[in-house]
Image 1 (cartoon, rainbow over the protein chains, first blue to last red):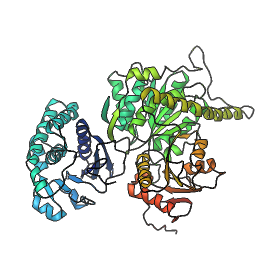
Image 2: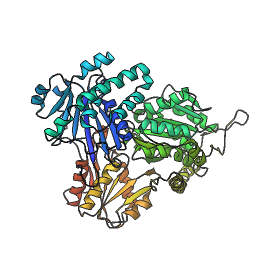
Image 3: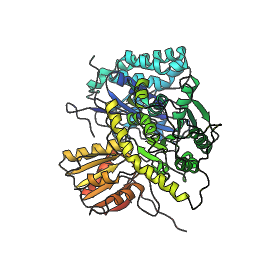
Image 4: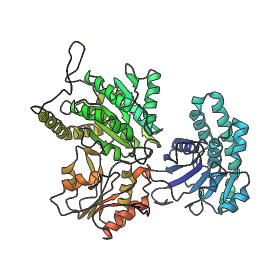
Length: 210
Length: 391
C-alpha cells in the first residue's frame, strides 16, 4: 500500500517513538486533529508495550486525501519522529523508513545521531526546550511543532489552535505555554525546510495549498 | 458535524443521545474510557435523569442492570475480556429473562496468559448466551450502531440483550473523523423504551424463576425463537438507519465482488477495512477474489453467506479467536451454512492477543490459498517458530 503520488490518492505514514509519559500517543493524535482541520482524512492510534511510564511506546499517524481504512501498524513510514533520546538504544526507530524519508528527533547532537542511525536526521533539543517553557520534560509539543514546521503538513495557526484546544482542560496558562512552545519549535524547523529539498528528500505532497 | 474523536468518545457520545435511564459499569482496559467519558457527562449534568452507578465488579454491574431493566429502564454497560466473563453468569440470566440490556464490548483477549490487547475471544465466549452480537469496522460504525442496538434489543419481537463489539485499542484508542449524531436525529429514530412488562413496588413480578422440567424447555425455545425473529428486525433497523443517516453499512453481511469470485475472503471487526483493501488490490491484478464483511454474528447470517459464496470454490475466514478442539468459531458457522456445497474452507487464525495483522500478511494468506500452497482447515499465520516442551 504505497502512496501513489500524482495517482488516485496519497497516503502519508508517520511513526512516533518514545517512552510512556512523554506524550508519544498525544503527538500523533494532535497531528491527526490538526491535519483534519486542514482538510485531510486522518487516523492515529498507539501501541503500548505495557501500561507503565518509561517503557518504549510507538504511535502511528496516517494522513490521506481519502478515508483511511488501513489499521495495521506502520512498517514502512515516510517519516519517523523520536521523542526520547535514549529509546533508540533499544528500538530500531528507522526500521522500514522509506527512501527519501527522514527522522525528526529529540537529540542534542544532530551529526552524532545521523552517524548512529545512518539516515538524515533533523534534531532539536526538545527536552531542554520543554524544561524551559513547561518546567517538565514532556517533549510532545516540541516534536509536533518541529515536525509540522519542517514538513509544512499543517500550518502554524492551525497547529496553535489545535494545541490551545487540546490543553484547554488543563487551564489557560498551560495551554498558552504549550502554544508558545509549539510555535517556537515550528519556526525553528521551518527555517530548515529548504534543506529537505536541497538534500533531495521528500516533503509531503499534501502540503496545504491555502 | 464531522470531528476527529477517539473511539471511546464516539461510543459515549452516541450512548448519551440514546437517553439511557441506568448505566452501570466497572472499569477494565481497554474499555475504561468509554464509561469514564459517560461518567464525566453524568457529572456535568448532561445525562438528564439517568442514574450512573459504579459497581464493585462486573458481576455487580450486570446484576444491577438486570434489576434496573426489569423495572422498565433503558440500560447500558460497557466491558470486555475478564470483565465480560465475570458478567457472563448474569448475562445468560438477562437473556433468559428477556431484558434488552445494551453493551459495548471493547474486544480483548482472555487469560491466561494475561493480555490486555485485542482479539475476539471474549465475545465469542458469550456466543450461545442468547445475546445479539454484531461487529463494527470503524468508529463511525460503532457511533451509528448504539441507537440501532437499543432499537433492536427493545423490539417486542426480540427482547434480548445486544452486544456491539469494537476492537480494543485498534478502535477504542484510535482518533479518526466521526460525523457526530445530533439529539434531534436520535430522538426521531429511537423512541423511548416501552417495556412489555415492568416491575414496580405495587405490581411485583418474578423474572427468571425456578423452572422445573415441566416448563424450562419452553422458556429456552422461546429465547431461540426470539433470536431467530431478530434477523428481520435487525435488517429492518439497519435499513431504516441507512435512510435516516445517509450512511448505509449494509445488512447482516456485506458481499463485494463475490458473484464471479473463485475465492471469497471473510472478516469481522477492524480487520475488515484492510482485508477489503487487499482483495480490491488483488482484483486489480486480475485475480477473482471477493470479500464478505460479517456484521451480525448472532443470529448468524447463514443464508446470506451461503448465497454470497454460491459460485466460489474456496472461502477464507480470518479468525481472531479459537474454539479449542474444533474449528474456530466463525468457521464453524460458515461451514454449517455451506455444508451442501463443495467449497473448501480455509481458516487462518491471526492477531491473537493484539499481535498486529499487517497488510502484507493478509495478502500472503490469500495468495497461498489461491496458489494451492496450503490445505483447507485451521492454521495459524503470523505465528513465530516455537517449540513446545513436553516434560
